[in-house]
Image 1 (cartoon, rainbow, N blue to C red):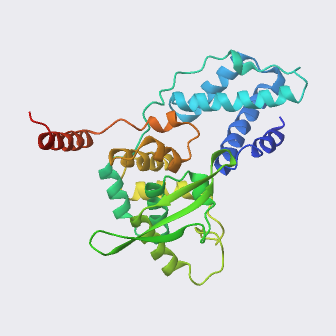
Image 2: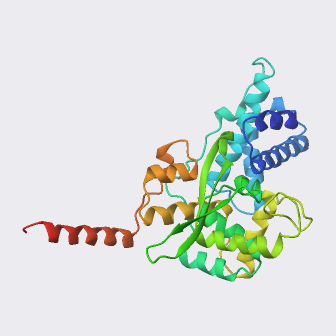
Image 3: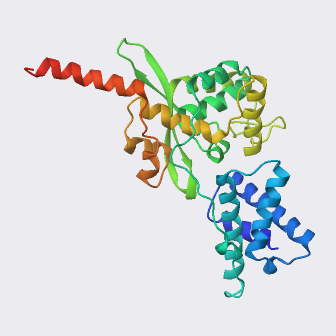
Length: 302
């Protein structure tokens, strides 16, 4: 199997190390499965693909979630399309005839506010707290956070109504599809970030914002392990990094942010993707309803 050739081709389309890592892992498992069956990659049939998915479920100890199955089928299909393109169409794609599970992606899974509060308040490591707060107050993707340098986020200040100032952050990052996008970082995250840099990073000249224990740029896997470690230590349910991005979006929507602004901040190519978050919580519903009622009572004769 020409896994490396496929990944090199994929790398020209995405800057996400996490995507490449996941694809390599899925294809390596498929290669080992075929070897155990004594099959070449071109000998696989639709039934072989189905058997492979069942094999993964057994190894996992429980049936895989529909989204997981769909993702792994997409990986295999992409790989076979790569083989077919490089064999002038003589290789067939067995995944095309495998039924895909129905996946409900309509409602993103944000973290409940009480769980989020316990997580943030429970983290005692300055680096780890800054990482989590950046996800919550900027909406970064995992690969985007890992590429940050110490000079990527520029601190700005704005004057509040009471005459005091608060600090926030702005910057640009290379997002999905290698597209540059602007981001903003809220005051709480900026405060945590400035404390981390002041106490942990003033004595080195390394450009990367977050470092591993070996003083190298932090990897996607390490960031995931950071979240897993604190969830376990604080006895919280298992959380995924992407849920923190969902939390950023959901919290902003329920505070009144428009779909157009959210689309820009999240770097979504399509407005419809951002609109998935617009399931308004009861507290926002009540707040806006009574605000409108107050306005009507002042302006209407009835």
